[in-house]
Length: 239
Image (cartoon, rainbow, N blue to C red; front, side, top):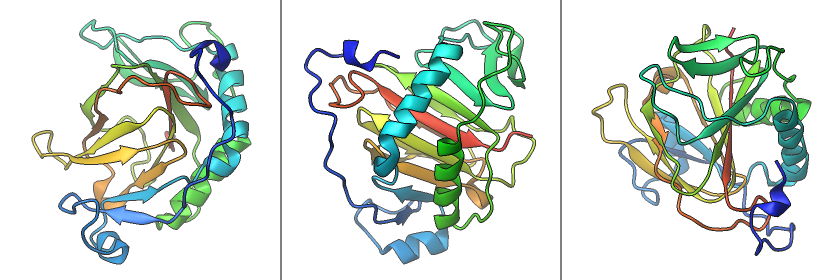
């Protein structure tokens, strides 16, 4: 992944750790309105600011190893459009898209080999975050890794290709800031806009498992650890 070459002005790797105070947000809450307890009672999106900061270096090293074995690539949608986000996978299967459709595949189409194994650091972080969000005993078997360069975005979509929709989604943000869009069960529902920063984790599931969600275009910048990009790890139970 060669983080050092991404941004000449990248500075020290040490970051000031932000509070890991947990907040839960619903679609109708303003970011600063209502208590975390009220948001959690209504359920929506559980936000864990800075949750991954204590293990950021292990996570980044594991991402680099995965990208060496299964390089990032810009996949095509079934309609033939090149996605602005570059992707790779690890785990038992990997999420892919091409003209044949969206699906999970046990083999990397680019190499013909199995995807790299899911690192223990990913699984442990996902289990802890899911437990704090009320989903005990969550064990992911796949992780989709998205690389957003400035201007890249993800349109509103549902994660519905997994066989086990009872399991939550755990999403980790590293690098540049982003605006996470979290909508309802219809594409037309107005999404809630949640700022995400380096080390933040969000979790959703249960009644909101099939909520439409996406990412607004990433604003240009240079993160002192990751450089000129945002990395997003989305951990799921696919099988």
